[in-house]
Length: 499
Ligand code: BES
Ligand code: MN
Ligand code: ZN
Image (cartoon, rainbow, N blue to C red; front, side, top):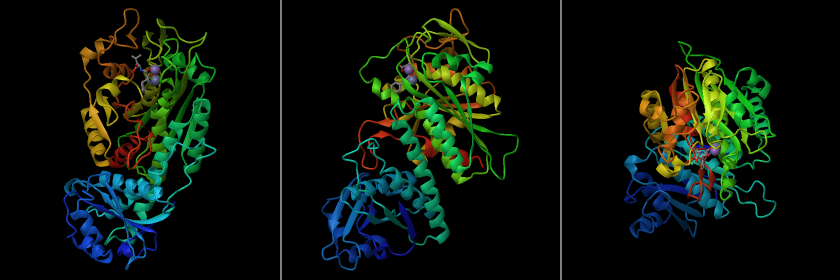
């Protein structure tokens, strides 16, 4: 897709359509709208007055300019952007995505977008570009017919008064982040016969080579040498060997003192049958996205490589398939993890925490001082928070607060659930140090987190349960249904804010 940024009036852009945001309750009296309204023959003021558009996020109204008047474009799209006082990058992202998807349906190939943000021009451009890219992602990769062939191929972002530098930075950052989110979403959407742990490692290596990251793939023999009995207990039941993917970003100029290192650790279960504790058949197909946490790590690392922050980051993905088999783990098996703790496996379907145990311990061995793990870990988080908020838990309130607050900027919801000694007691095992499930039906999401906590030593740690947010069952005005790429944008901010 082609992007251009201009600081002049967007009515000059030589495109097929113009899209402009409209705030809740606004009249066409602000100077920018007034001017455009004049050019558009009063259509904007009329549409607002008649309440054909109210300015709610996701609202759209297409006006055909006939004759085209002074505008080069024949179509004018008004896009709702909500409350003007709350309008920031999250709102720009939704509005730009909504405009792109709407115009794509109208077979428009090129349009100009005016985000009308009072904030930073670079941020406005970045979020417009990001959204143009992510809003056009579709699930039709494997269709041979009926593929969505209509694509918007050019967007001109217009921000009055922006400098060339701001426009340029906004476009390059937006493209880096938007493409990286789509990279994550493409992985999450891949069928599990295609995206095996080996294939996931291959895609990671290829991506790393393309953007200049170091990628190391640790095989089962090396994992066994490191004593990763917990991770390997999940992989045992599959013909597909597990891979521990380790990606390192080292900045040219490292500004970090004290040897701080942030680790992003992801659950990469390429398919989760439940193992011997087999899941019911209905809905099991959804478990192809059980590698979304790992995909988020890979997409975020890709973006980081392109954005080049001045702090180092290590990305770790435990890519494993969870299958029932003659060699699979049994409920009641006891295994030893790489930190020496013994685990009684009481349910082989609680496998995410088993692989994260060794992955998180490995992150700390690599020198991580802050760890953020992400995983489609529990069905319980979907019951608690649905698809709007990611569950967040951890051992460091500062780190949690930072992620929650950065999520407010990006529009990604994070909602904290409590941890504590009383919860941790509930995973004590009768015969081993810990067991991999808590009491039936009680605090399922927290039980997953306190389990992972057992494998964090001194690092500050936050756990993101993205089971509800990594996949949306319904289409939204700015996004197709399916994989969302959740947390990529917020994690990029986390990295950049520690520069
Ligand atoms: N991958 C699932 C969690 C999940 C469920 C993600 C639904 C997305 C949608 C995880 O491995 C799992 O099976 N968790 C169990 C844990 C239980 C056995 C303690 C669950 O949530 O039922
Ligand atoms: Mn499971
Ligand atoms: Zn799982």
